[in-house]
Length: 343
Image 1 (cartoon, rainbow, N blue to C red):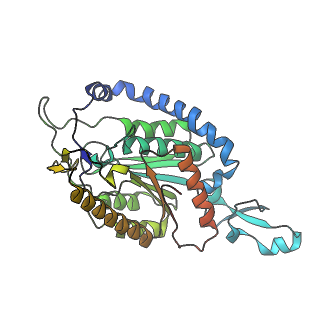
Image 2 (tube, rainbow, N blue to C red):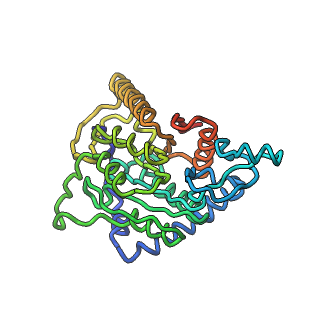
């Protein structure tokens, strides 16, 4: 298991204290949503220019209407008979295209609560989900979620049924931000949550999400093995996007001298000398090997992949995602596409 947390200084107790006040959660969710609407969504409104439909790919069978072809429409939906008669390209609009559901499968395990800079991966997850859920829901679609590890244990903790509207997004943010339930007496150390089993999250989603939907799996994919098969099964029924969270420090260690590294999920600790050039090189090599294995696994599962780093600009990340969807619309169904952090 990757050591996902560096224990180099005591935690900020004031921040921890603020997190354990349940009464503040709804207000914090609304304040966060207002901030993102002003700083990110408002900016995206001027950049997406009508490309919201690329966020979700409809595949309904019931024909609802015909309309003229617009830029970035899926060419597979062109009605060639009508196009030939009208001498102008027309596309079919299906019932499911008008009201679809997006599901967020959220890995909130301890390894996600890590960041070497101003943001943790958990903050990137929260902001990305908030922005995308709001963009999707305000255009008539529904959003739901399945949460894993949000209560401080390695298990699926909550399922939020898919609904529409801004209040639904606030409910989702409330679930993400709520503190973990205490499992030990005050004054005693909290036991490790245990190794993440991403397969549990994916299997639960397969049973929960019945109607074909757009599914975002948001995780750092630091997990016990055997999640590839349930991810592939999910992708055969739904339009799945793997949103991978990562931090630059997980790829390469700087020279910081002696450090105590602690696995956030198992509690295992190891004293390492980052001044040792050989150790840093071995760390980078192992990280690169894990990176290659993970990317191959996502490709074999047949899912789109968007990588989000803790130093990414959120608006740029959403635009990269939209660009990914545009490029995918020109490919044959079933062929995966990969979009890296710096694309």
